Image 1 (cartoon, one colour):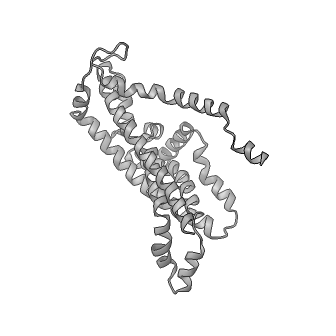
Image 2 (cartoon, rainbow, N blue to C red; image 1 turned 180 degrees about the horizontal axis):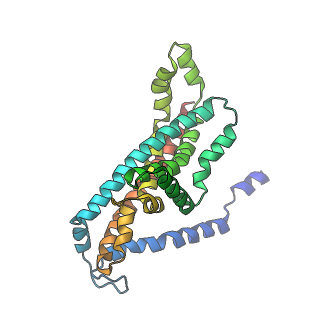
Image 3 (cartoon, rainbow, N blue to C red; image 1 turned 45 degrees about the vertical axis):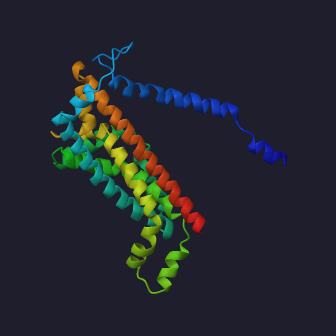
Length: 271
């Protein structure tokens, strides 16, 4: 009883630290939507007045929509490829005995710990040496590289969340490997697949460093925003755009994490 009471006792210093940490991290970000409604091109207090003209100007900015379209295309393609690769790798490492699986996983997970600026420079040298032109395709390949570890980490936990005897039962009933995968495995890991896609899409959509080093004449949205910061009169429009991206990114990440948790809990309850 004493040990249980000790474990269940709340750790107040940890709670205080968590509150201060979240406040330090998110309070400055909350000023972004606030200044996007300010009737002034300068980010200063006090606020001059309330206006939505920056949002109206943002929706009329054709170069911004072109950059957004580039980011959406790159994000969707790279996320789909990264999720597909992560799906097959996660199934392989959780369902089969592979010699040297730990070094393989270590190599795949390296992009999670290697600084992006180092990877960006290395990929730039590699791409130019191979003779490829910098374009949205090179950005897509880089985003696949940095997204696969996150997709793999998400899907491994999903594969470990349900009993492999379900796949064995399907095989015993005469289903082939592909039939078992499409009819049994894939429906079971579908929440994890969707969560992986949304997480990879957010990583690709928010990336600046890879797009900066490997982009050509068609900028992605982060590159476009960075270019707008040189002109003070365009800053309010950037704030309006940043506010929308902040809200959408938060919603996408929240949904992906919720789907991942919901899928694992649903499988465990079914077992």
